[in-house]
Image (tube, rainbow, N blue to C red; front, side, top):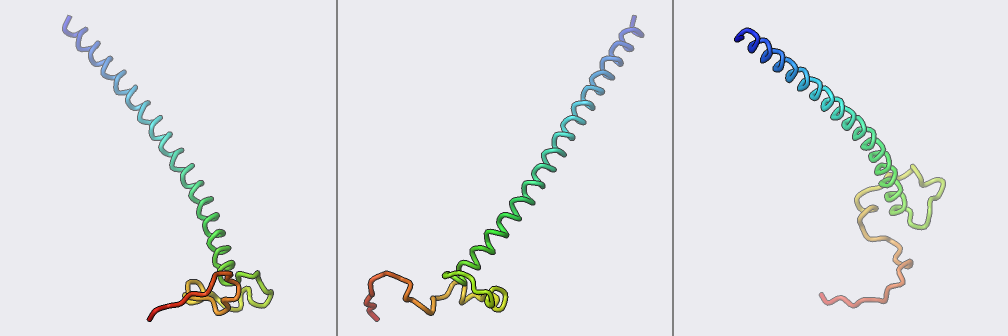
Length: 100
């Protein structure tokens, strides 16, 4: 009787281990698929953000449009990106008086 009980217990433990291994393989497959999908979406996101940043820099350095000779001739500097514009005639703002 005890020999039969040991065999039944061993068989049930073997079934439990096999079910656990099958479940782990399914989870690992799902995680790998999720990682692959995430990498694909991040590649798309990087391409979109790079293109958007380039458009923003071009629009900021050439607000009235691109001239054919100035597209690649002058790379943007910190001053051209974030400094004051040399031609303030485009601003319809009223004049300001500054107190020094």
